[in-house]
Length: 338
Picture 1 (spheres, one colour):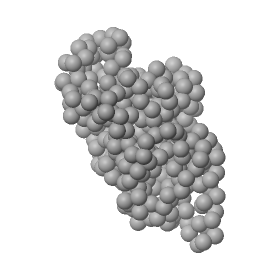
Picture 2: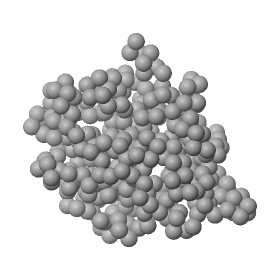
Picture 3: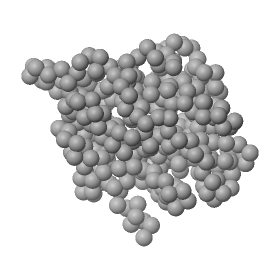
């Protein structure tokens, strides 16, 4: 594996299934649609963060850490999986929740991911600014210093781009896994569609594909930032990941495809296209997707298919990055339907 030199804690159920979405394909009447089921990675309801955390927890174990610190939104899948990973590895865990979605109802704050984090016994802190990654990280480092003064050995999982993107290595692994599955199925894939936020998944997948000489395009639909900001973030992280795995210079600006048409009105907020994508996926395939990441990515996939970006003889893969618990924080999904 391209990532063999990095310490890793095995946390995920892999390889995850690659399935053909017969009903969605028929409903949309375009390209053949496949789904990579990274919602099935295990670890407290799974998701893409399980793969990413394998490398952070691997390093934490190598450093003999006893406490994990992480920051994220109230309905953060990353934080929920980090709590589960810490517990699996016998560590304490403290979570800092940021308010990125103002005016959400009480269900948003009490159900879904925050409910599961509390169930697993995480110590919860709050950070008032949802758009200050450096400040949120600095707050974690201050907590870490206090823990050290109390005799603990904490490990911080950073959010901002100022630290090496270790988590992206999990999607270098996923790229290898996907290419093997494509080969076994003799499947020619013409595009992989993902939600792009922290850019860990996007950068790792892209770097992994290019390192193995695959030119499959990765289509990233924004979940948090505008197209220009996200394009730069993905490009910079992908270049760093390529260097980390010993393949510098393989990422070009032409490799970065980002679209923000499904972002409106902002992070963790719904629009009619996302609502429609959530219902269509559930009703056609019995597969649950969330409003924050996968709903926006699926809405993007539907847009591309309906606008003939792909022809009927092409194959596209939707990467289901999980996030299912967040659904319970959005009662208006059902209210809109009813």
